[in-house]
Length: 339
Image 1 (cartoon, rainbow, N blue to C red):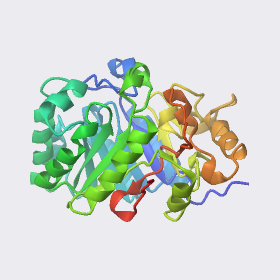
Image 2 (image 1 turned 120 degrees about the vertical axis):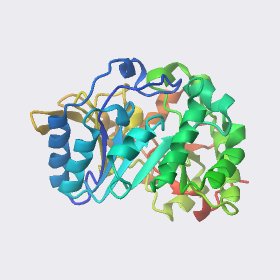
Image 3 (image 1 turned 30 degrees about the vertical axis):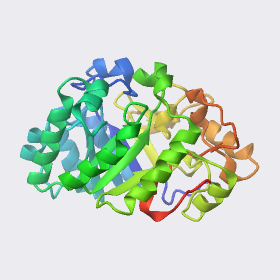
Image 4 (image 1 turned 45 degrees about the vertical axis):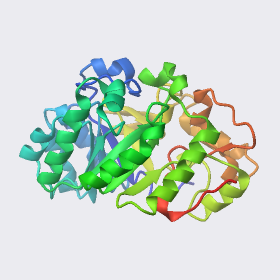
């Protein structure tokens, strides 16, 4: 029987589908045009329910969460319930609203999406003028005492710009740079040419690890691919294959959909639904069964891979083994040299 201890520690609450942008890799796709907000009462119910089950850290996501009309009330509810850390993932365009209605001592960190070191790269993905607005938002957050991090989805467009992006983070006094891989879902479902092949990804992250030793900003990234010797190195830092079965995180969307693995959104039946103040597990074959099957079919749990990888149309040739996309490591912690 599964222990409830440390289950659902991280709660990702997708409070709205609304957004001012239409990013080329947005996992919501056309749902971002629905302008649907999670009702305040439902958000409060989700926060209370999963807090009782062990949730300690909250990440507010969208769409663009700063567009939710009851954002201050949702944050107040989380604080009153005792969530240890509250994070907002944002495009940075509505920083003045957040700084005026919510204090920096209430929000533990703000993560701003930045997909390039220059406007031309970022705007190609997120829309004309969005880079300058994001930089203005970052500066405004820092000016008002917020702890700011940057999230970058690494694609073929910005792959060769990461060193410059790290320098920009240092110049802006950013605490952490969080590198993500592209999810081929939503608007990203037809962007297979944006995806980076295993060899290139690993070589790029090896270079990032070297750069991390000389920069101020902390860099966190998903290894994504490794060969067997490197898997054993990752195991020294806590990796144990597909982490979906741990249920240490849960994502609740504005329509009540409950997912364990967000890269599986749109590809698999969700883990369940949140309705009538309660979580209901899906009776159909769902994503959790894919996690279990992934581990059961593997030679060892280290080689259980990542069920979400199969939707990327990348063949793991030349001995590359997929690494769980939800698992990340700090770049300065290790050397993943595969030479």
